Structure formats: structure tokens, C-alpha cells
Amino acid sequence: MNKDWDWIFETYVRRFTSPDGRDTFETSDELVKRIILFSDLSPHDTVIDMGCGWGNVSLGIAPFVEKVIGIEPNDTNIQSAKRTMQQTSVRNVEYRKGSFEAPGYAGKVDKIISSLVFHQVKKNKRQQSLANVKNLLQPDGSFILCDTLMFFDPREEREKFNAVYRYLLAVTTPSDIYDNHIKPYLADTGYMYSWYDMEKYTPEDYRYYSKGELEKQLLEIGMEIKRIEEFSPFFGIFKIENIG
Image (cartoon, rainbow, N blue to C red; front, side):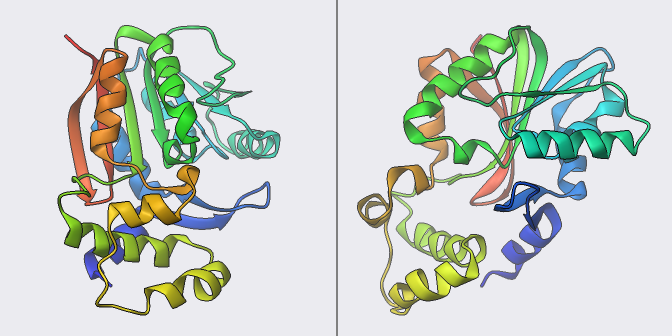
């Protein structure tokens, strides 16, 4: 295993059983700090935390902006976020039910931040989800996307994809599923897994996605990546804005 990659996961990602009972990954306090530094937040900003979970990002950014709207599809997580907020001095966060696919909010905001969520959106819903983001933003607004995806061309850089693919399967899959259903197939260390193998054997909603795919979908709605902070070949932050 790559020790630098291990450090990134240990520093920026926390593995939890969520309030709704799922094995999930949560944005760590250190990652919240990196997102804040990257996002160029203003005291006058209204910000959506899309897929806010139980509020770690929304509560972290709240002191730096005018208002935060935490949007989350799960009622249990929303209640947990509200309880956590009541234990702090933060009072400028509003939590409501919604998602990338159906935000449940009709206003305009200055920034939308989302951490470790977008890869969970079903493949056939991603284009509409990005269009929803565009519709929620002011014309000069920014979409700050922190997520796991391939920051390189996995079809061209096969050795890198093989290493990343094996690593992510080992560290992100529940241990019982990995040990019993995945690890035996990775025993042949001489075999180089390709993007095409992933497409062939993995249901499309569970496949990793790439920066190239994201760029194409953004172009279709008139948006583009303006800035990138890459932590590893499979993890980082994007600043996305309207073209022009």
C-alpha cells in the first residue's frame, strides 16, 4: 500500500457508522479546514452544503459566511446535524431535506460546497444534478466539489489505474465484503486491472468516475473547472464556475 495515500485517508477522511446505520465516510476536521481555505469564502456569502450529512462541513464554514443551507436526503442525519448545532454557538445554518437530484430549494446562492458525496449520485442522474447546481448558483457563483475520482486518464495510464483501483477497493469496501468477495480476485498481483475491467464487472452506479467525464458533463451545461487542489491521483477539490 502507498503510505502517502494512507496518510491522506487517515488525515482527511473518517470512517463511521452514520446515524442512519450506514457504513460511510465523513469529512474530517482537517479536510474542512482545507475546503475553507480553498473556497474563498466571504462574510456576505450564502452557501449550500450539498449532502451535508450530520453537519461537519456546514458547521465548520458557518463562522466565515452569512448563511449556510445544509441539504441532506436523510431525515435521521438532518436531526443529528440539528442536535450537533444546538451544542454550539452557531445559529446561521438552516437544514432542509433534499439532494443533488432534487435540491428542495429554489433560491440563488453564492457558493455550493459538497464533500465526499457526488460519487454516490447515480450515473444517469449526474448530468441533471450538475444542472441543478448551476441553476442554484448566482451567475458568478462557485461550485466547490471535494470528492474521490480519477484525476488522470485511466484509459491511458493503466498502471496508475491498476494501483489506484486495488488500493481504493481495499480501503473503502466494508471488510467482510472485501475479504469474501473482492480480495480473492485480486490475488494475482501480476494482473493489471484496467478501466475496461471495471466497466465490465462493476455495476455502473458503483464505478469510479474520472475528471475527464466530469469535464464533459460540465461543458454540456456551460460550466468548467477553474482550479484544482489534488491530494492524490484519486482525491481532491475542484472549483467549478460558469464558462466565461
